[in-house]
View 1 (cartoon, rainbow, N blue to C red):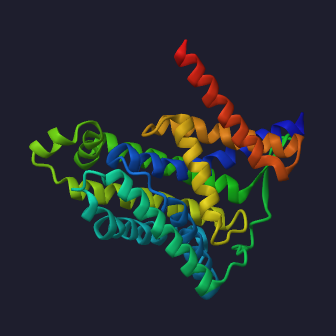
View 2 (view 1 turned 60 degrees about the vertical axis):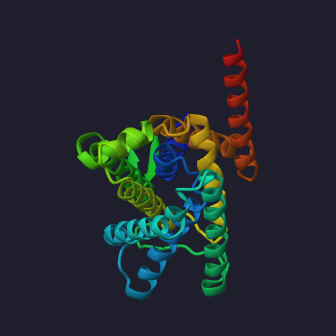
Length: 287
């Protein structure tokens, strides 16, 4: 029973990281209708920034986290203005944006390999091996608990921004009816840029949190991207609540698959489960 409960908690904590990744994906798609293939690489950029700041200057990853948010927000907004904005007037905007972000992902991944190599990296902080006991049943690693708390804070802040601020309401309105928003005189470009910036900042946070939990490498971003897309599809494109449910579900499935079968087939079991759910959903809709 203790092992099963521990596995369940591990899956929920992992699902929190997945939620942060998929939230950025679903935010961009819900607003701009863009499948941002670069998103996974943005996670890895957050990891590498955190790693090198820790190695060169000894700054704790959690202390440096606000700077990671700022850097990734600026990067995301810049990517929109440089690569996505020129495509918005095209009749095939969604397709061109997809190909552009795919090319950007390959470019950044190969640049990272050339500059820093393909070897796995890990931020080995002094308290990374410490766990907090919850009664006599569960041990929760400090880094994973901190990650979950930060994920919750990010989710609450994002909700408040989207629900309570004028800019957040404008961003949500664009996702519903962009024509009406333009007629009201709202600057759509600014809203898009902020959306890309926020989504990339969320990816950067996820990368910083992952860097103290598991080793990362340049190609790891693509693996995270695939999982993010699976979650978004499973929970519904453009649905934050669906992304939360899908993320927790994927994390729990992976955790139990690794416990009962093998960590080597964990990803395969998770993808099979997702495909099964989608097939069942499709069959139910036909009925």
